[in-house]
Length: 315
Ligand SMILES: Cc1ncc(COP(=O)(O)O)c(C=O)c1O
Image (tube, rainbow, N blue to C red):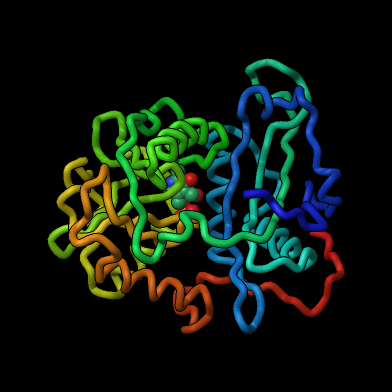
């Protein structure tokens, strides 16, 4: 899906033109994959645009960078303000926001510490990710690729390089006719999708793999846990054996892009009767009610974007 360009990109505290956000081919990130990033959604509500869990995303960006000894020269709140400013100035909603911290053009060699840190924020128009089937559920497979092994690439950091693994999972799934692949961890327990966390409903409880099973600490995952607890559903962060996917009552993905996407089949084995189950539907309904502003934002998940003026404000 082609990105529809917007007017401005936020770069190190300044708004630059979309076409000027270029990198040298010898930038460290191009050669060694040295970047961390975020993916954030901004919803269009009747009272204006609202960014989903902006402080949590910016904290995870800072955490991802810290793991790689990258110092982000902005506070969490300054980064939130930068996102708000960008969305306001470009005036494109609903949109996807892509904050990116990378090692730029400096010394070349594996040692990254001599290369400058560059911070870019981009936003653009965006709709649903796992697409057309997401109300009735999507067909997925278990990938032949494992998720990152502990103490190799840190799964808690949302690093660009991790997505080489995600790309292998995604390509294999698509080429075999599935919408997405679920990766197991190196021990054969369920980990996550190429770009989503996973939930399983089994005997009335909601299971999701713990962070130790090589998953990204998903911000939507956390929102699902909060919603489920509020609905008095037992949430269990526990290792999930592969075969539980086949006998589960419900399986669904969570993620910024996927939002809440029911899974209809795994490896061509239908999950229960197929389609979204009652717990998935209840969580999905409440999630969309909050992000679309149909009900009050009782968890304080949304940051409003003022829409009265298009004048840039320096951060
Ligand atoms: C590998 C991976 N796991 C899980 C997620 C879900 O995380 P979040 O809900 O914060 O988008 C994502 C997407 O960001 C991801 O890329």
